[in-house]
Image (cartoon, rainbow, N blue to C red; front, side, top):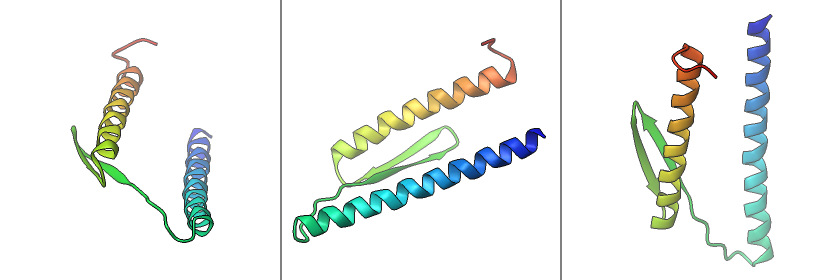
Length: 90
C-alpha cells in the first residue's frame, strides 16, 4: 500500500512540474506577443554531482540566485536524510 502511495505522489509531482513548465512557456510567448517580439529572457541551471553544485547562468545575478538555491536545497536534502536515517530525532 505504501508503494502505491509513493508512486501516486511521484506521478502527481511530475504532472505539476510539467504544468509549471508549460505555463512558463505560455507566459514567455504571451509576453513576446505583447511587446512585439522584443523580450529579454534570462536563465540558468544547477547540476548537483555528488556534493558539488555546478551552476551556470546567463548573467551574474541569475548565477548568484542559483548558488543560493543550490545551497538551500542541499541543506534541505541533508536534513531530510538525517531525519529519515534516524540520526536526528524530529
